[in-house]
Image (cartoon, rainbow, N blue to C red):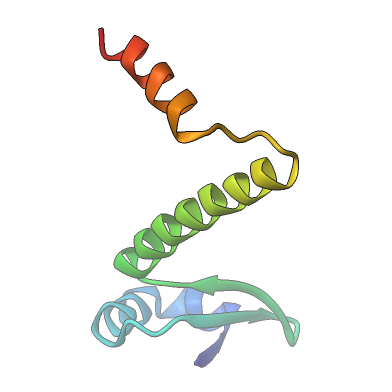
Length: 85
């Protein structure tokens, strides 16, 4: 992963964005020697958001199972039949 100063981002934003699009590798932006932000391309960001949504759905399902909020197949079929009317 590439690391750049915030001043480089200010001065060379167009070049950094072009490299980011070409390389599709995140850039760590530092300010006063400390990590301040990550700069990532649009496709990577959108892919990451889709993955996070999927993982959050799995986590909600696991929590429901842990809490006993589950249905039998017959119960689920009965509920779905009501929705599909």
